[in-house]
Length: 250
Length: 288
Image (cartoon, rainbow over all chains, first blue to last red; front, side, top):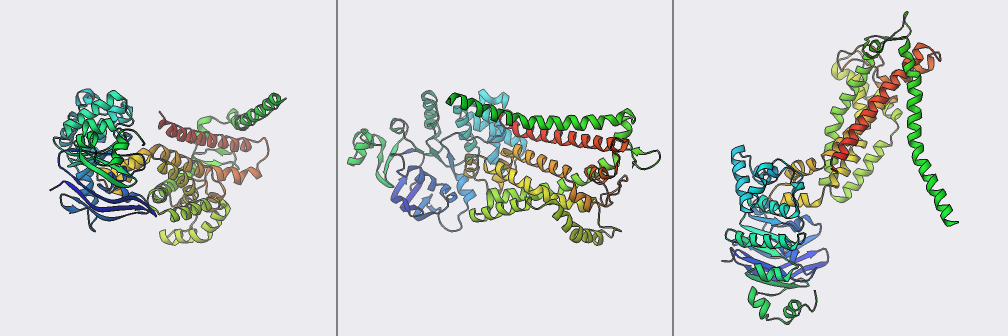
């Protein structure tokens, strides 16, 4: 069974249809990339998996999104449970204006009070996983806003690890970073895929080609092509995909 | 020619800018000149810590401690009432209310700010006073508490509009980040949004307090105007502002009493200056 599956998914913002009949199956513990030109609906699609689109006035959905076989748009779905399981990393690093420690401890504290000792363990593990522990362990009490952008983005990933999700959604996680930082975050992603199912939306086709196992190409709200990354990039089935990949538009 | 015009306009604007500062300085100098004259005849500690304000007695006594405590009681009371109400209101407007209701509420709050203080005093006197009187079984309904309640309603609009600005200017990404971690809306509000807006909230509280301390007309009507040392907040008190307003008309210009009233003005000026300064500090702390 696929980790995430969409069935005839349509999404409307008022009268505008942002997603059209999307059928997609995402496999567990792989990196799946969504590519396509601006406004093609790739971020919108990503945000249906943790129901962040609910925050937008007038957003409406038809069809199903199954995660572990369960439709998350069914009435009575617990958003807290869903978002604990399906975490998100945003385009711009968005650490809270709190200390480094409190940023990581935010999730665990939110989901039931834990003792100081427990939280310290969680913080150490989460920061180690994103290779920040050695750098930051002596200044956990200083503000997270003083970190470099790359460190902030790592911190946001660590903050997510602390709530032990299954699925990690990444919405252009490197677009605010320089090439070196981007490369290091990509290495981190390959490392994380052992434990998590990762979906990444990216503008950067090279990035999709480098890090992902599967790639979906979207255009004007439709999923045009979806398959193994090497196949999509070297031997696309659809002419539109080929045109995009060879840089004819987008 | 165009350059000349530019220069004239620039200089005029510059002059206007400095005019504000000039006025403040002039007011301060004027206050200080007359206010400090008092201390030629009265010791400063007798003025600040004296427990009897009795300018018409023989010899007259100018201890402002009862007046200071009157102001303090009324201000603290008003703060205790207005801060939770104002915060709840600001959070509701900024975070919870749907858009159409937000517009209605904001307009309503601004309208509340536009009510003249004499009208608040009038309503307080006729409606609130009797309620306080019967509720606490008091000989009179005109007490520190009555003044506090009325002043709280005068401070709330100032607080709400500044707090609401602070809350809505919290970056959207904080909210999204918190919700995406599985926090509920309420958890997001009190664990991310309020801390992120805290400097603006503190500034709003300070400015609200500043408004309360300086208010005269409503407190004069509502607090009972007894210049004695207040023992409880349910006793009549008299604030510093009300004292100046009530007595300035009956003093002889140049008398000790006249200078004493200016000295009270100087103390008030100092207090509001300090509060504005603290509010400013709170507001700028965020930018660092």
